[in-house]
Image 1 (cartoon, rainbow, N blue to C red):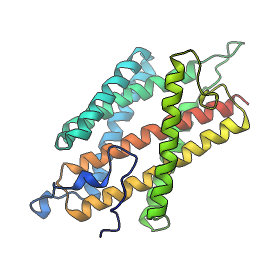
Image 2 (image 1 turned 60 degrees about the vertical axis):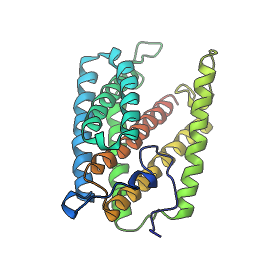
Image 3 (image 1 turned 90 degrees about the vertical axis):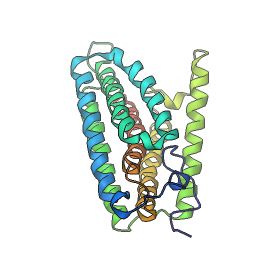
Image 4 (image 1 turned 30 degrees about the vertical axis):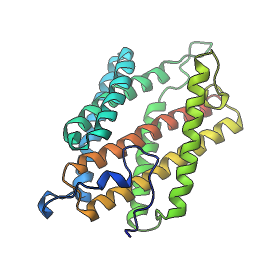
Length: 254
């Protein structure tokens, strides 16, 4: 059995079933790690350009269509993996519009005296996200961090618990309330530690994503899976960036 198999990641975009029944007919048409890195870089460039446009133009109305459109395109990509070369750049574009708007929204929040509470928070969040990505990638390639079965199961359980909290908070929001630890105005020690824990779990999901991409390359998945692998990383990075924003906002309130 492959060292990568027997676990299904909580990331809906990347799991062991993604590579079943879809092997390349020859080596030149097979997925490679370098190819996935290239596709990820292209996708991130699209996301950053789109985000910069929304951020600098202050077109906050793009947040909602970007979010909804991104979700729809993500679902299409998951169920139609061979469309990934076309849907992933669109997903990156839509998520960029959303993240740029959300970042501008954070930095536009004013205090009681009219001062900007979170000025510069977007650049800090981007820097931390990039540092985490590169650090974990280097650690994984150097075998400092290994995606063992116990590691995967632990991350799976923690990620599932976090998403249950998200769902509960969404349901509660319909009744005018919510879970306090998710509120950026809650700057208690417990709330900040909770956000830090979520950032750690989101970061560890990157290690599992690397593992599944490596599996695809080892098993000879078709070339379009390079785009699909890039999509899986984007899903995790978007989550990680948003959680870092939330954590930094809470810390600014202290």
